[in-house]
Length: 241
Length: 241
DNA sequence: CTACTGAAACTACGCCGTAGATCTACAGCA
DNA sequence: TGCTGTAGATCTACGGCGTAGTTTCAGTAG
Image (cartoon, rainbow over all chains, first blue to last red; front, side, top):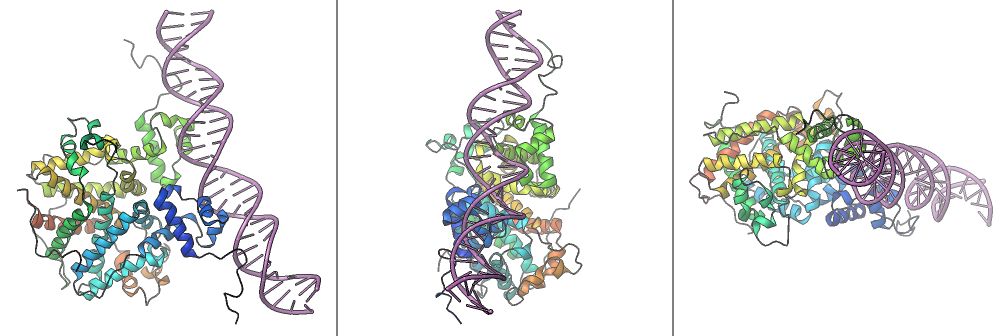
């Protein structure tokens, strides 16, 4: 057989799906999702705008690919004996990824609304399977594992959406109220919110994540045990009166 | 002074911001966010494409307006003596809104990433203030109220993002595995996920929300009391080994 | 009757995603 | 050597996009 390296590719150097996705990610990281266009991507690759279509059938598939690339950094050790502490670590890694790629977060949370689960790039499903395995190995039924997975990653999505919200209106202002622009809000209508200017200004994402994890895991421990059955609780309110 | 109704407006009938937003919402509900363009909106209003710019300075402001319109349906009774049951009701109303307008959910969760809090339409801030008031009236400090608000609405965002995920690949198939397209996934790599086909297919959003609320509120009760101070917990893992 | 004002409509620019046609350069073979 | 098939890269073109700037025009004030 002939070496693939002996015969150089048709045009300049070949290009890999990974390179395409990395170029796309770079654009998104620097300028946001809306700056990513096939033409812009082609320019970044030094190729024809249509070149990327070889590696992503469509623009939306390219977006799914960017999500996959980013999520490929999210490892889950499903052999960890302590599922709670492993979930904590996954949470911290997930947050770190989101903070490192804030402009990707909109894609991260919304692409699954558009692309059916089974058609998503496998890299985006791997953390799901690994988390399920972690929980099943810890004694949960697979259905309960699914519930916990959903609650946990829903919580993580919610956390990063909170953490990455835009708060600052006027960056060069030093007073919190003015910096966040909260003075624009009618004081009669938003008294508490306005009073929270200092708290909003000193938001600490890592600490908030830990406190959320405390609450979530403590609730989980109270409501769901690895033995497999859900407990009924006394504080559960009735749906309608 | 002259009656405003006596003097008919310059061109045909006047138009209100509310009408513009409702027309925009109708397009999004029917065909999704990406189908909403200024030209399309103009057509729906029977007006020039530029007409809508009178009520939204920019396309993104229009999107914020759609979010406001949808969130204006979300009432929070801050006088409720039982904050937990009021949060449950808010959660159910929020879910109902999301289910009624699934195509708006991407906007609902991502617009705050782009528009600074104080510049968002007031209608989107009203549930925030009302929830803070509910919690403060129940004895929480305003900073704790903010934490609970974030955790709670983060949870809700996460829930609807989970509930509205696309799962079905091949709708006319009857077998769960085939309908969800999970047979495409390599069985060695995704054994648990594939096995969960029936559970995925029979997802019940309302029930899942209640179970999530049970866990969240029970965790909240264990970790945070209206007296105001956060408790330290024994199960909290240390950051790094 | 004229001049002004403010809202509505129109025009035009540089983008976009991508279907389809075209070009290029090598592989295999006579 | 020259010919042809083919697969990949590139080009062209279409209809649509957000919106700045300009023009139109009905109503009001003087």
